[in-house]
Length: 315
Image (cartoon, rainbow, N blue to C red):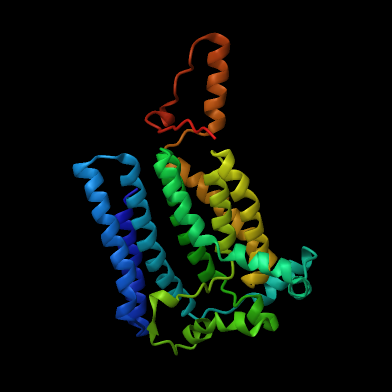
């Protein structure tokens, strides 16, 4: 996939939307991400032309992709929120009730147990650090196919999340039920955008304004999937991201259905990403090796699998 083209298209859509809405960007907030990208581009150039190293080159290119995309996608989400479509919180609360889940009761339970609340807060805030670590880890350990699957799934799921949030926008449980004042303060851009009162956006102060699907749930599934090839990494990432998924309810003000929707988006994005990149499913490879061991002949690769990259991952 041409990620440069995708980033340009998303940036163009965000720019047009912000222009129409008369929302500007704080110039100084562009400096830090720009410097990070320029520095990484310099490292990429060194390890592409002068000291060729596919692993370092991939790590740099993937991090640049995610830095640029995360910022332009966040701006696009701001544009979508500003469309001021009717909120669906009442419907989501009813769906939670059908699942026998009551958000205020759960939120009160978490806040009444400080160690649990602290653990949830720390887990919820670990997302960006986990993403950076996974991209670098997969790249430097030679799992180049898997890092591309992760990045592709992350981009696809983000675009789907933004699109869905525009169709079924929700203010979230904090706003609907009236949660912690500190948490509500982190959503000040939501009402300002819907009422067209936001004039400037600081890229260093972007807020997560999407309720359904929960993008924290999406990222947690993607991270668990990316870490599955390393036993040591999986032992940390599996419980940590299960904790993140649960914490998104109390720390992110998500309804239970937000979480379930996020998990669904993540699974679909992984399947599509692997398909787009031509990655042979592990079950197919396992079956082929079993047949090869029994007959001494490796079954031929199907036309749809020809040229598909495959990396044997060791934990």
